[in-house]
Every structure is written in C-alpha cells, then in structure tokens.
Length: 329
Image (tube, rainbow, N blue to C red; front, side):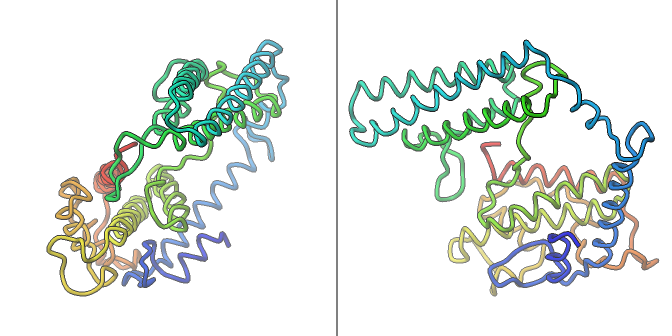
C-alpha cells in the first residue's frame, strides 16, 4: 500500500492539526477509489500508447540519441552555470565578512544580473518557465504573517539563486544522461517535481497535500467528481487549518471558543477570512462542498450527487485560497 494511503487510512482525514484530531469523515471509500485510479494508471503504463506491453512513448523517445548540437549547448551551459555558482559562493563569503563594502555590493549586483541573463536564455525568454519563476521568487521574503514582501537579505538571496542554478544544472544533466533530443532547448529543461504547497508550514503536510492535489486532478479527469470535490475540500481545509495554527489562536480575530481542531470546516474558513489570511474566494464554494465531511458513504442513495460544475468550482476555490496563502505564486 502506498505510504500516503496508509497515512490517510490510519487517520481517516486529510488535514493536519497539532492535536492530530480527525474530521468526522470516513476515507475508506476515497482510498478504494484512489487504489482503482492507481490500478488503471498502472495498466495503461504496462500497455503503452502503442498497445505493446511494457513500452510507452516516453520510453521510445528516451532511446533516441541526443542531437550533437544540443549536447554541445548543454555542456556549454553547464560549464557557464558552474562558473556562476563559483562566483556566487565567493561573493557570498566576501559579503559575510564585510556586508557594507561597496565594491562587494557592486559585485553582488553584477553577479545577480548575469544570473538573470542566463536564466532568461535558458527559459527561452518566458516568464512562466519554472526557471524564470524560481529566479523571481528568490528575491522575495515572507513577513511573520506569511505575506510575500520584497527585501530579502542579500546573503539569503545569493543562497537562493545558487539553488536555482543548481536546479538548472540538474535538469540539464538529466537531459544529457537520458539522451532525450525532442523539442527546443528551453522546452527540454524539464521542471523538477512541482512544489505548489511550499507556503504550508508543516513540512509533513506539504507532501500529503501535494500528492492529494494530483489525485484530485486525476479524479476530475476520470470523471469521478465526488472524489475530486472531497479531495479538493480536504486540501482546502488542511491548508487553512495550517495557516490558522501558524497564526495562533490568540492572534485570530473573533475566534470562537475551543481549539482550532474542534471547529467546523465553515468556521475555519470564516475565521481565516476575518483574520485576513484569505479573501472572500470561499463564497463561491457550492453548498455540497461546505458539507463534504457529512457525505462519507458514496454508496448511500441519499447522498447528493456531485456534478462536474461543483467539482470544478471546488477546485477553483482551492486555487484562489492557495494564491491568498502564497502571494508569491
């Protein structure tokens, strides 16, 4: 059994609280549907797009020899990135010894500009490319309230940019080692595994909701709108609970009595909105989403049927709240 499925099974909920209190919802049905989706995905992988067992389009592509000109570009760019990393480490060390030295500050700015030019070239000039986004986010820092603000310390910015350059090298090295010659050079720079929930304060929860997010999208594509809506709402409750607990009960405006873990789903959303953690995007949640905890048994004939529109609305509200909690997205 997948470790995350076991995690959900033992706790019977998706959100995480400091008290590890569970929602009054049974996730057994969700887990069985998840296993069915995994089984279907495995079967598709074994069959492959050409109907040949064990062979997929990706596998065929990876056997193609890499183009000589692309290999030369990769090697040249890796060497340039390694040079930039060496310069960046030297500047960071010098800055640590004398942070007010004007010449060092000038060297830092020049290095950052060179990094920007390189990232722009590797990303094909696209601001939506993962490298370009990572470069921009390196200059942001968060306030104690979790809001994105400008003005991260210079040494911290250098360390973050070094991380971006190292990710670029890892991606380029992966292309060279795989022998994948398809697409343009910038398109060949595959992004690392998506990390949409870096704003979540609980590190264990980040992994859970990241994988659950993938499950919700897959369920929506498969037409399982009940599972898609429940998973989206579970993620929504999880990240809002995380933000509330990080803020602290004493700092929450007009908070009801009791622990956060004892509040209902709607109460958590309302308090988070009053505290300024999120805006009013949850007003678009369909009624069935607000009572998602109450519909544990999908086989019960009295359970309201979830429509595609309701499942998509829940997913859209989740995206809005994710942007609220992570302004740097």
